[in-house]
Image (cartoon, rainbow, N blue to C red; front, side, top):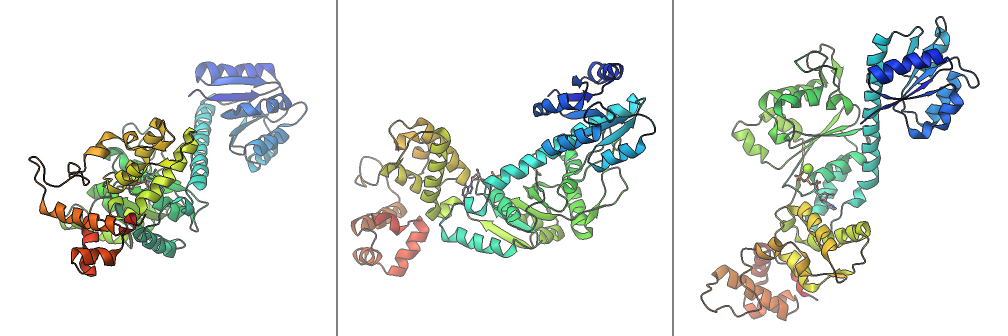
Length: 461
Ligand SMILES: Nc1ncnc2c1ncn2[C@@H]1O[C@H](COP(=O)(O)OP(=O)(O)OP(=O)(O)O)[C@@H](O)[C@H]1O
Ligand SMILES: [Mg+2]
């Protein structure tokens, strides 16, 4: 995107010269102002950088600087000043100017300074956004759950919020690993510091090392600029290594070193950088197995896994299915602005019976789609994606129809399951009564609940 530079100088010749370089030569959009007041009137246009003469008619440069900073402390300002006014320039730096240039201006040095300042500004805006967004939307309370297994996860989490222990979050795709990682950061002592995510699987190998640790200018072909790595960006905050199981061996070694020594170097650099960063990581792989097959370093595994958190897949915490469905229905009806009152009974059953291989993310997407498609004020089965209605391996057995018809052969297991469901329907979920009718012990019934993932409460209505 085109960047805008404001130039404030009362001498037309200088303003013209600067415009020549900044606009015509270096390609920025430029606006010039003969004094500070006029520039401040336009500050709402949010320039990406201000070149500010210090000796101005009316408000002097220092005052202008302060007012800009009050409006937005992040906008970079480069001060221009006549020779010999070094004290004023130093003052300006103290009040937050990015850099200082004596006149006549050394344009060779000015170009990289402008570039650098704007890049810095972009970065801090990005961080700022990240922090704001996240602080609004990822409070602990925003995690919806009423399943006992998730309550255990939360109980575990609260124990480690105010520590620096490394946490390895394990769970299938879409179970909420990132959400948990955010919650740990934003409810802990580092919450006002950066939370930086890096996805180890989505960045090409050759780039990952420099993403993590940064590099110095010229350290390899293509390294035109110094790059600050994520570990440095996360300073005093938290770094979240997503899909950490995909890290290749050489980087595993380097990561281990950072954890142990708490310092590192940028690629091609020899300055040791202290690292005070909390490390959270996540994987959907079985890392223990990866250790056995020598794809993952054992020592690193133990370092990352000081505190394991395992998020169960949605299908094994069925207690969450309808709670989450209700939550997402509310989220999307609000977002999309459609008055939908709820789910039809059949669609509730559909969701409850489905296995959700893509876990919470799949449900979130499905319900967004339902809300978009729904025409009746109630979500119906037909509003769901068709695979939800079809993929259940046993969906061909309609439980309301007699078992033995035509050439369909029903597996024994299925008959047992259906018999149990039938008994629960008749007894309205009364386990004792169902056990009696089925001539089974209560313990057996509970075992079968586990096996077939049945929740008897579903039948109580
Ligand atoms: N308990 C929950 N309550 C509310 N929203 C949830 C919950 N769990 C997950 N989500 C939502 O589901 C989506 C997937 O969660 P998240 O990205 O944290 O999963 P993940 O395990 O990191 O997935 P992946 O492995 O695909 O990266 C997100 O939009 C998240 O907000
Ligand atoms: Mg994720």
